Length: 284
Image (cartoon, rainbow, N blue to C red; front, side, top):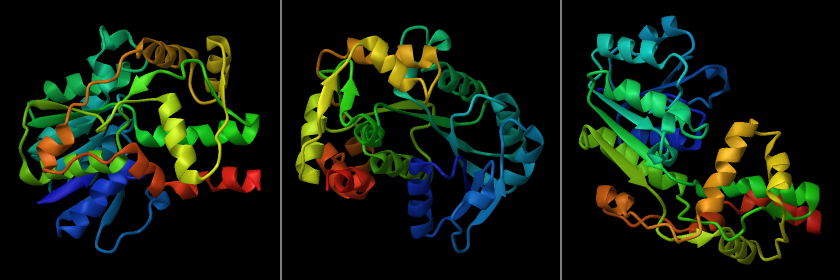
């Protein structure tokens, strides 16, 4: 059985690839530019852009399972090609944002939701993974610290249960290998709800130095997000944080699927010290 992993440059996809290869499964990896992928012994790398449906047939040759990064452009053509290729299980990396009211008109959710709908209507057995906030999103604070000298947040008390990317990879791999949870949507988050203030405190403790925090206006926060996303997306993200006034319920899905508790934010921070090395060096 061959598993196709799309979006192979992503952190979750890389984790899925490593786990499948280590367990001896046959894997093919795909990216819009496979020349940028790190070569893996015995693993074929192919070009796959969902925006160009003609290249899907080659990527799907002899594939029966797919780890699918949610890309709305061209998804209808891709699921049709997957059905024609005889794919028996699609495991989709979606987003918790699709659980919001009217996801089709929510900039955060719309693309993921379009993929979920196309997959659910494809006739191919599927599993949807809906992770919430990634712990690794905090790497973005590095650039604020380097540029402005402080982490700038409009809603520093916003609560969420950040999930380690390796937990998502563990769940995805378990589902792919076992071929279970068919027709299910698995909501995923981390093992503890933390405010941004609490996350910063943990990260500062791990790094061994203070991480200044500045509370800014919503307008200033939107301007800070502007280089990375459009205004509608930024507003939806700020709305999400503004509404996150209560601790996020811990779902426990990682443990239910894998038999192992989810990794804590502190563990993530300890494993990612090097991502903040520039901040440490700037402080001298």
